[in-house]
Image 1 (spheres, helix red, strand yellow):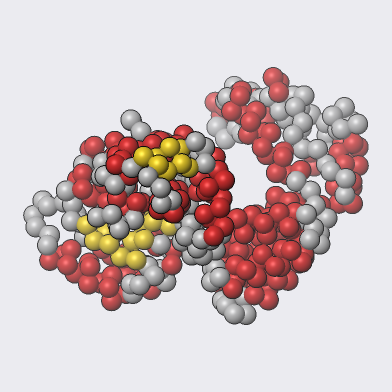
Image 2 (tube, helix red, strand yellow):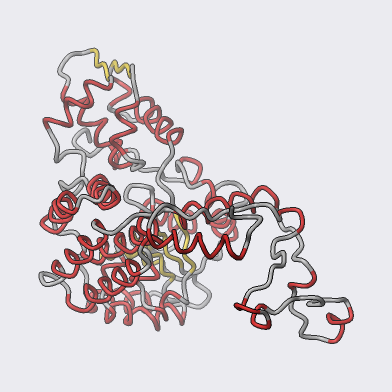
Length: 424
């Protein structure tokens, strides 16, 4: 039917039609191998909205011909969970495969709701597939998380989104009958934010807004339609990721007023305060870092407080933490340092650890000179002795460069005293 949303009309039915997530469903990758073997274990799909979590669960159930039960954490309670588990138990016969229980937004399930799943997952009454936009290690209870693999889905890339546009225009039974010319795709892709559902909703909106027989889509047309219909391209009427990005950039730019404004927009829009608190922890380490190490302590304390008290009172520790971060001195030296170190590891691979730095728990290892000539720093004045800790091939690399703030100026002075040749 024409009035069925384009995103629903374009929902793929097989893995071959599924766009994106090649690291999971490409040839020889973990989920494809699991599906092809016919033996799947419980798992959680973690990724941003519109990247195919629900679709992937439906494809798996269809391909394996398993009974498929769906619960939404927003509208289901313990009672509904138990009813589905009871149905699954009643339909089980000798050697029949487990039904699949798909739970959307599993991060919104309470502890009691998650507890009610444990026995069924452990006994194999159901195979659980959970979908979440939030880090499962924060939101899913440990006993349930230990029984599930976690697979990370990524926002769709430009090539994926371009392929999706082409498929919609050539395969959709309604759009392929129209004369549609796409002159420019940049705005479509930019506004979608890597979200396939949002991309198709925008495309649908722009096409329906044009009454002429020949439809032309360019960047200006897309921007014009989205300005006139701001609710049409965002599921919740809030530019979720744009606003959190603006809040973080305001903190980074040391503007507490702008940061408070964007946080207030999220809170008024019904955002989960724990989502905001987690982003504050990231900001504390990425943007404030070693210029004020207390920022991480404050951000962690804020998360704990928000977790314990909830809204509306949670707005107060959130505000306190956000103002503290925005008005703190800034440094991204730790962020840059680990990025450079990881880049070097990818480039150089597994270089051998020097023998004198290796542990020697056995006689054989001692005979092989493991740990020999290692200098124990505490045996020397000032608890420091100059020795090379990097592999010989990498000994001149420096990842950490202290930045110009009071805290790191002190660090730099110590480094200059210790490592005269490296820090000058």
